[in-house]
Length: 171
Image (cartoon, rainbow, N blue to C red; front, side, top):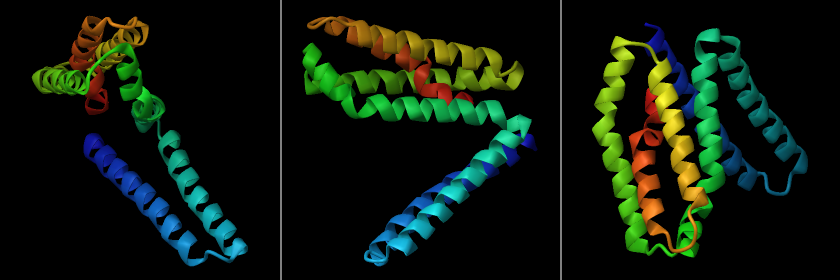
């Protein structure tokens, strides 16, 4: 029941966040010349988002999973826009970058049932630890790869596929 409640809350929060941001953007266009209406709308949108933050942080059952997802989303938002440029600078072709994505996806498909079994039979500690460790190691390998060492980018893709892509699923 706690899992279903968490799923429902996350779905509502995500939907509320998307609807709030979407409605703010649409309304900002409509009230283009009215500065006080824009300020009021932004204040309302931020108040709604802050209420969701307090809702999740206020319940101990959701605190760790939600913070984990927020950290992963924030980290991904920081590096995803520039990762492809970084790989090109290291000498990777677009075809190789596509192969890195396939390797990560295949690892996710391969290990998702194992993570699910571990979550069902044991606890969430070890899957979360392994997934976060794989993310750390994979990103470190990718970040420290010198120019021309495409083999390290392949190794990083394998390590990231083993765990990092499963982190939101595990949480």
